[in-house]
Length: 105
Image (cartoon, rainbow, N blue to C red; front, side):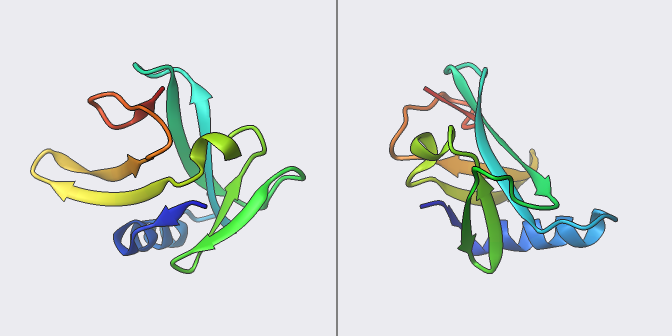
């Protein structure tokens, strides 16, 4: 299960409104790369794919591909606004992570 904080859900809804094209949900996935071996990737998507797990958190639909599902179980996506900027945060108790918080092992 993936959980969005209320702040992350609000940021996703804002992005969907501003996108200028239809978006049915937020795609969440893991790709090879990053300083710990894998990196989190998120983006708006118009529709789920055939092998996607479709979830809902805080009123936002999430699409997760079959390959990423095991590595994202328990993930919480937050949204932080600091003096250095604003952006999504990832807290995954199932995976090790690096200092940047955008990568996991």
